[in-house]
Image 1 (cartoon, rainbow over the protein chains, first blue to last red):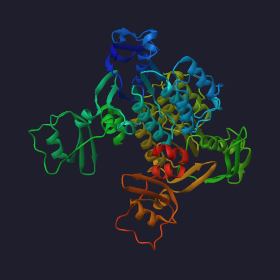
Image 2 (spheres, each protein chain N blue to C red):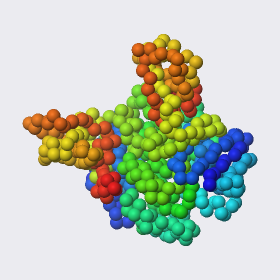
Image 3 (cartoon, helix red, strand yellow):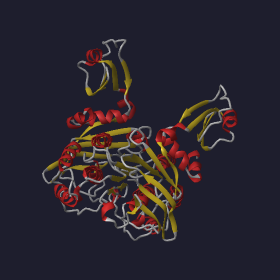
Image 4 (cartoon, rainbow over the protein chains, first blue to last red):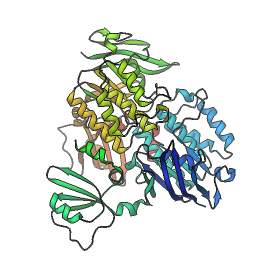
Length: 292
Length: 292
């Protein structure tokens, strides 16, 4: 029972946001959805959750359209950046309303999480700080009985301790009761060990779609004197370069040339996911800004 | 010309937020203001910027009250989490309005920054994503002619590349034209090298107020077999503990005992700012959650 996104196309006022997008989201998997500010991550999540309609293309669950389909949509939950809650409602009232909407809302877990995060059940939603609004929405997302849960910026405004609690609770609830989470975040290094599969959305397309271990296995930093590095990486897929003093680094995504010996002066190491992402999605203007 | 916060007291509906708070903000210095979610950082910044009034206590600039004082308030700018802008206004109109309000608004720099960050000058504020709303507010904060600039969550929703651009631009504009920045953020490790002085707000009080180098100089991780670590740290100011397999870590804030030899089995290293902060501000419930 997978979700299939096929040939999805979306534009706003003549500007392309998503261009012929295809991807598959499988059951019981934790995904990362990465992309620059404005890349269209929220738009994609809104389309999958039927909150907005794509200009063309389809979103299906086992060949059944998810568009205005109560049966499939009950299986999907989107925690979004938008605050849909009444400013005057109290946290405990909003938990109750959600429980009425979703028959199997886990009220016990919600109350336990509220205590762990220090969220006051009597506070009004409108009086919560940025961080606590996120915490409130996170708790609901972890307690609804959906099989596909989309978390759009789940740690927005959260302090380091609260982020750590969230990651631990996610692992725990996933182990107790496996389901699919798709996490869209800018704190990439913090989720690397949580996610199994990563999508990178850039310039309207999915440019990376794969297993995290496989992807990091073919991401390299080649460091050393400029001439030696350039000779070694010639013809490889260089996605970025750095220079510091007399040392040059070339970042390579894709296979190395196994016939080519690594010079003694050159070090080859794997990149982490954040560094890979930054290099894959860096634009030329910014690369220039980095050098200035 | 420093800002003095003296004996500031603030409560909301009977709950203490700030309790007898004292601090000094000096000219031409970059500060970090750290605190857990809900610690009262935004409240403090709002009081200093005269957006809300403290229940008691004073905020002065060279002994002159900053409360409703046009002369001192023109020197202060708060970039806040709240979005005060009309949803329908375009970015370029909002820049113009700001320039009219602030005589010396640096319009050239604002346009250059908009280009570097990829902010569309024709976009309406209401159509900007979370990240681009932050970018828009950041640009204004960097271009107003204030001498004290308070940045409340300046990287909220920013991707890794945009955060890096912001840190570099901050250093550059500060070098060109020194003034004071107070940065309130949850991405502590990213600002450690930017800030000179740090305030930590916890449970209504400032619990750390000092030079970053001095503070990290007296923050230690003592690691090794449990018995040896406990013997070595006995009587020191232990702010946190970790256990992993047979290894124990005690985190110490404050002087070590120089008369006490370090056992061969024990390693003593300095903590980074994020780790120090997490241990100083961790509550017991959460410490338990971390262990579970």
